[in-house]
Image (cartoon, rainbow over all chains, first blue to last red; front, top):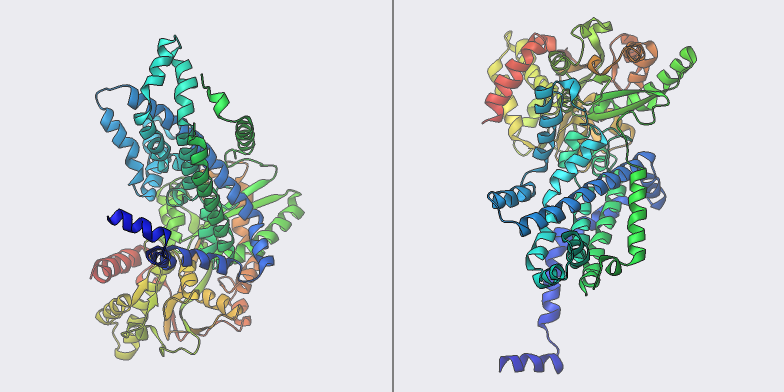
Length: 279
Length: 345
């Protein structure tokens, strides 16, 4: 009866609940997310587009963006391959300590990123564990270089790709894999021709999520990178440095780029998922 | 049978490979990449930025080029003094450090990053100084004339965090010493109880403690708070750009003195001479004049300071020596009084 009623309402009348609930939703989002984002745009372009463009094309700003993209890219490559491998191993085999490993992989989600930063320093730094074990001269000093930024990015985004890929593995149709095996395909052939194609959507969304998160990483990078302009200063560190110097406009110019960037990434995620998951 | 190749479209795959190659091409190598010219890496506390980047680096580059025919480059990082010191101790590739407080210089020595004899540089290793003042909003709506007025109820104070900022520690010494000095002239004996209670009352009014003096100024500039205790230079920079603020000069306040020293742990024999030459250059007349131009006060020649009419006259100035130097001021005032009594209340 009630089902009938609502369908009637949809066809004949004007459903007030619909615009009302949309308005409430947007109304809640407005002060929490939309207006703060809008302020970035207002502040960033407040002195006109010319000075906005100048802030954006400052060599230090361009370097910072490039460094963020490159370090995030390599962290993504690593974490997607590892996530795929880990999901495969943890789904395929049952062994003692398996659950402990799954929990460990997920840990970086809840660990403050600053902790990730000094954990790396305490391992690799000149007063760190490795230097104490093997002597300072035998440990490559990679802290305060681009490698440190990649390591920090890998740490903080470690669970993301795995988290997207693993559930797809769990629910995957096993019969295809079994059929492939009965037809005489090797493990590798089965993986390449059967398993991998059905994971395509998960791999792409895992990669985009990891990449987006790594580009925005701040807390761990500020500790391990050295924050040298045009050397080890990523885009978020550049924003922070400019803000601290009182150059709020320059900070906002790069903030706008990062905001648009995440908008693009999540749009791709949204539209590509359907396209990729259609068989 | 479906294959991965059929499903992942060819343009997509080609794009991916192209992107990967592009990325591989621009992976930055270690800190020595692109070292055609020699680079001096300077880590400085937050407010050093303008004087160094706008005047002192270019001047020294030109001088070195003229005398040795060699191009040198500068790169630098600026943050709170304690933060900078911790970064260097953890291995940041600094060649030279300019810090807010001597305690941080001594921490570098303690960790064997810098030479123990850094006080043998000119002027005991101190490159410049500036007094601590109070910044208020234009028109001084809260009627603030001295530190004690910051203790009044309803005054919102921005004060950097002494854990990461040297300026914050100067500010604490400034408030405490100011009250000691004033009570001394009024009654004949310094009154630590009065100094302690003023510090406590001001700290109750602190609404935010940013990581560095510069960060604190940015917060103040964006409209937070009624007052900010900071280096005189910060107020003068804001005035220069017609910021809607006023500088209030306390009757008695501290002169902060900023040490510079090399980080010889990171220097090889080839690079050491140029870094030492740059260190020495900081006490040259040119560099000292540049500091004065960017609102620091010279430590080598008071005549430069007298020429600069924007500098405030301070009735009862004092330095960290009033407390017996940093080796006593840090444990006695910052730790035992500020941290243990004021902050934990």
